[in-house]
Each structure stands twice: as C-alpha cells, then as structure tokens.
Image (cartoon, rainbow, N blue to C red; front, top):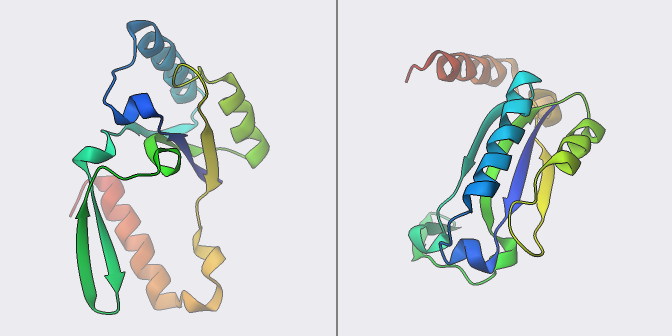
Length: 142
C-alpha cells in the first residue's frame, strides 16, 4: 500500500525557524534507511503557510486567500510518500523517526486511495487514462 506520512506544523515551523544541523543529520540518516528499504517514494519539507495560498471552491466560483493560516496544528510542514506492506509497517517506520521538531509534535499517516477504491465509478476508460497518466509521470513526460 502507498501512504502519505505528514509532519504536522508547529509554531516554530510556521515562524520559519530552520531545523538544527543535528536534526537535519538525523532526518537524512532516517531517509537513507527508508530509501535503502525501498519504502520512500518521495519526501519534502514545506515552507510556512505564510508563503502559501488557499483556493476555496463554491460551485463555479473560486476565491483565493493568502497565508498565513490560523490553525497551526492543522497545517502540514512536510511529507513523505511511502510504499509499505501495511499500516502496521508504516507505524513501525514512524516510531523509528527522529522527532521532527523540539517539544510536542505529531506525524499523521494516511493510506492513498487506489484505483480499486473508486469501484464502478472508475470506468475502464477512466482507469486506462489514469494508468496512462501514471506512466507518463513516472517517465517524466508531460
């Protein structure tokens, strides 16, 4: 299964406080373990929400709100995309992860939807398009 592992933001990450060299070294070592185990598909840190935007949808209308966004505990500061055998395996990896920030912080694990999760709504034509797009992305085409 594929899952997204999200590092929740803290007041410090939202303030743009950079991680220490020690934490960067620990995270790099952890990322190396993930890569060697064939678990990590992608992973990145995110800039504070002050650098972001939100787009709200209402019917055909769109409105844009500039960051920062108020609820820090609801924000994501970084993520990994992992390929694991089960949620239990993902949990084991997260338990081995260095704490992403000083003090209290959290990491959320969420399985990705797979094609079969969409049932009959994903028609054979839509499934073929989805598979073609995945292949093009993997090949670096646009």
